[in-house]
Image (cartoon, rainbow, N blue to C red; front, side, top):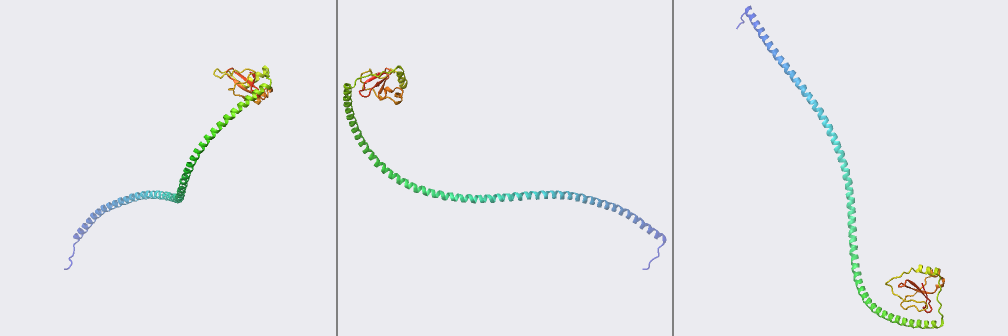
Length: 265
């Protein structure tokens, strides 16, 4: 089919229509472009905001990682310290265990020694019991012998006393017959020295001896030798004897050869 010729008015109308459609399309595309630009800008702004948020989050994560690393280093240091302490404790435990084992062995040895000592002690106790029994028998025999000896000694002492009394009586009788009686003359100063030396005092409940110068001293009166410290100050009473008459508060001097009273002070 052959092309038909086109008239000028039709061409002008078509061109106008094209231009009108193109303008409308341009206006529509311009609005779309503005919307696209706005969407792109908003997207870029959103991306920038997201990027900023991510950057801040990344910095926070870096700080957190640094803190975690520091904590990890501290934990590692503490772990190393605890490991070293555990090693020391382990060594101490080994040493303590060794000492405990030695102590247990020592205790076992001591227990064995104690058992042996206990056996020896039991044996010694048995021997001691037998010895004590024998000693008791010997003690009884010694007591019997002691009683016999005491009786013999008492009899001997009585015999000696009786012989002594007879000898003293004989000597006294002979002395009375042969030795003249002479009383000791003491000065007031010498008497004061003797009284101060003995310090005798009168007592109401004391036994009275009724001592008189020139008479024989009572047999119940205990006679003592004059102390050397006293006759150093009063030489004339050397070798004499004395007794205290506390009923009268006096000191009685007796000459030794016949037991006659030579002074009452």
